[in-house]
Amino acid sequence: MRIQLPVLVIVVLILIGCKKESVNPPASSTAVYSINCSATTIQGNYIVGTPLGISNAITLQVNVTQAGNYTLSTATVNGMKFSAGGTFSATGTATISLSAIGTPTTSGITSFTLTAGSSSCTVNINVSLPANPILTDNDHMLFGNPSKAAAITDSINNYLMRKTYYAVSYSEGRGTPNWVSWHLFTDDIGATPRQNDFRPDNTLPAGWYQVQSDAYSGSGFDRGHNCPSADRTSSVDANSSTFLMTNMIPQAPLMNQQTWAIMEDSLRRLVSLGNEIYIIMGSYGAGGTGTNGFATTVNGGHVTVPATVWKVALVIPNGNNDSSRVDATSRLIAVSISNANNSTGSWKNYRTSVDAIEAATGYNLFDRLTVALQAVLEARVDNL
Image 1: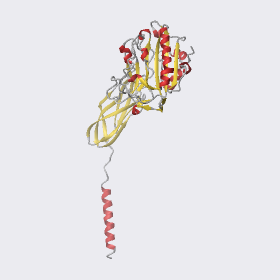
Image 2: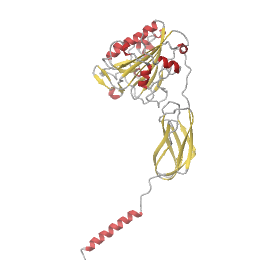
Image 3: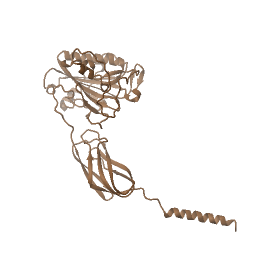
Image 4: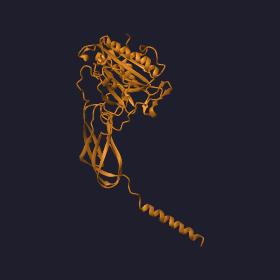
């Protein structure tokens, strides 16, 4: 009998311990709350074709009756969705900020429904069309904004910079322009010598990485201009503007100094023969071959080496009312070339169609021309 007693005690203790645990279950971790529909605000601008970012949000007030974890989201409407999640640490009034994701596709009022428990709110957001500035002859973007670049800091990889001597869609993530567009005519070409004052662009938004003048040093790639130095020799200011690093890409030296340079000379020769030209140059992909071999990035990964470099040039005789003087016979030159040292020979060997470049990039390069005119000009491969 003495041997069994300790066993009996142990069993009793275990049963008592289990009973204690079952009497006091853990509190629920799910919050209970309702939405105060009169205290809902909308933040940011909502523009067709402009990706939403950190400044786009719906902020609302809620009444928490049980603390805990919460999630709140809307359905996707007009290419947009709002969501939030977190923990209420106490009961009472609290504020939730729902972040937006997506890109608006159509303008007008878009309605979103927010539901928490038995309370529900409808939030109306006004989506507007992009600003359509009045463009005049010689404007660097007279014939379009290929990627719908926007001059808002949320557009971090498609940031529009309207400079005096050219326009840029800049990618902070790549550390290079997506494209640069400019108008070239006789008044742009003078006797100003090359300034060589490579420098970072301090007009980028605060907090963005600024590529420094020596970022390509030792990489085996040139600091390849998009808008060429020789296209801006009318003044020191004009030439100096082309040496901002937001106008540069890591470009294979032999391709840059031979094939690409000769093409640039050819376009300036067309200007000297009585033409004006609307030019867009861009690049895409990752991975080029310079004097040190293949690389996908330089500058410690801050700058992407593009795989392909392209340029399009719309050539029209000198005159006025430029947009009205483009017709089905206008010359449209398009070139696409691998960013490699073996991309040599005549630039004419690399001619392609604008349609092909648009298919590779997703851009609409001359969207201010009529659709019918685009269809004719952009399918053609220059052969002059």
